[in-house]
Length: 330
Image (tube, rainbow, N blue to C red; front, side, top):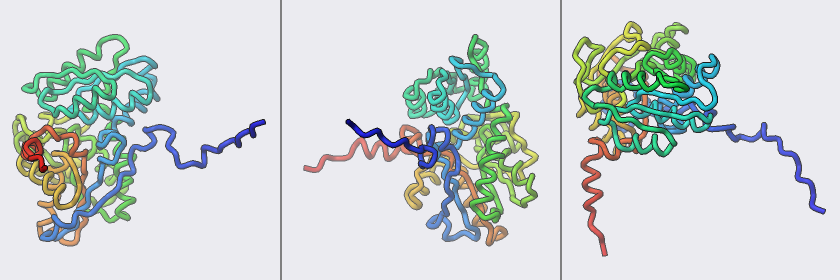
């Protein structure tokens, strides 16, 4: 007679209940080779180590939890969102875990990898007119969400967005820098990362300088006009409802070229394989670190997502061509 197997105590095992338990608590790493001529230290929070490789996993989980707590989404419903890619990907994988349907509107100018990821996660993808940018995608998402059993996440106006960073990103930064962070640098897409994190530091009266980053070609925070640019994920062309410019001490503009070249350098000099928006963040952080006025300070910025999300984009245009034309050695 076969022995009866012992009852296992799963509560003592270091196994996550599901993928949502793995969101957050991403590590910080110093830049070393790119900061040799700098007066300040620069650290990057590696948000590409979230489950689906971007900072947007945080707000996707926060928005789903908010909808469920308030009874605004039911079994079998379809989550709808306008996205440049990462928020949609975050919502898509969480929808898969929780058993919801998912439908996303994305400007056709976004990278092919993002479309593929959304489709692979079981979501429906609707491409919007790239000339209309995120405002155009928003309008289409709003129209789609009016259908029965469709729920619009509304990342640009949903308070669960900055609240996610207030409750996770801010405390993690304070904890992991032992309370010694001097400057926080973040690109503004929805404005959730910078607003929520700033609210946390203001709330504990920690004197952390808050620096917003936006594309020079769509510098609406600086009072400029919206326009097309290559820094996917930031620079939506309007100031979102959840963005609180008054919390920012400084706004820096970054060119497409600076963002792309910095992302390349970070990969080749630091081994951090990140996307274009992370390149913009790091470019701005390095600019601050080179200022003698910031000597001795710790500047922390965000590595928003992985470079694998941009293999077909302008970021890797040259290496794509080189890889395609590699000779065969016999």
